[in-house]
Image 1: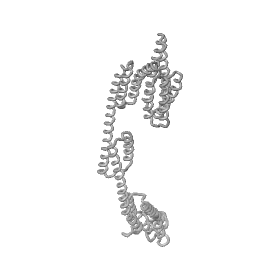
Image 2: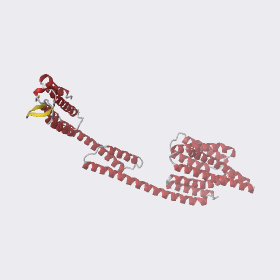
Image 3: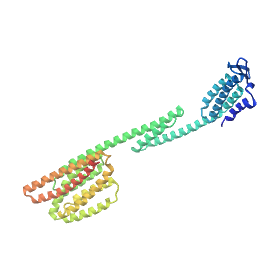
Length: 428
């Protein structure tokens, strides 16, 4: 690619084969002339110098001009400049040669420029081909993005889709533009798909929020119906009524998480009040505490096995809620067995709470509110039971005081568990 041999040829022709006098001459007054195809041309005058010195001065100018053309040829061959810039540089150099105040083979330099110019058509074609290939690649990339965007717009990935559209948009911006018409058409398709997805996503969550509001209203109505049943002593029919309410509760679906947990705590407390009273009455009436103990131990064994290797937090919570419901429905057990049972129940609660904490800690501020509500709920029940114990003892009702004390122990253990859960959020 180097043009150094051509440049050296110019110098050789000026030294070994052809003398500067072959291309010009010097008058006695120091005026220097160069010979061209059109005849002699005055290039300047060097007064007070020998003819050799005057000729050497203008010969060096020729050498410099030849070196510049040689450098231009090297840059063109190396595609270090665009064909357009190269064409302008050649024209500039041609003008410089034609008007050069220098002595040398100027015609050879003009032929060099013509040879350099002959390289440009191939470079122009190569650039055109490269641009066409890049244009095709860009169109293919943008079409792939349009296809993916339209697929996302028709799907229901409401979480991942948002991030993917954001990434696609950044990729689109990084690509070069193509012709205006094609680029605008493809952008219109991409933008339309993104707008369609956004509208469908907003509509989905709007509908979901409306449904959750409806569920909240349904569960508040169930709680309202359950409240009068809490103090009922008509054990059979009221138990059936609570089962029906529970079936309606499950069929209602889910409200917002914070609302759902708070509503469940209220409903659970109402059920606890009734079923604790029923269990106490039944235990006192037929002495089933031993059978209750066997049933609770069996239930604990099953639930501990179910939760042993379970990783699904929602499933674990559902199992735990169902367990607490069934556990409380079984009634009281002998006092000497309560500590062991409470310890195992607390361990189950700690396991589920720990699973939930790992999932939501540091990310869900609503979870902290639920923990605080649970502590408040259990604290209120503990305070109530303490008053019940004091009232029973003051009235001399030892049996009622004993039953209330048993319930107090249970709720105290649950309160301790709830406080431990809340403490995890306070430490986060």
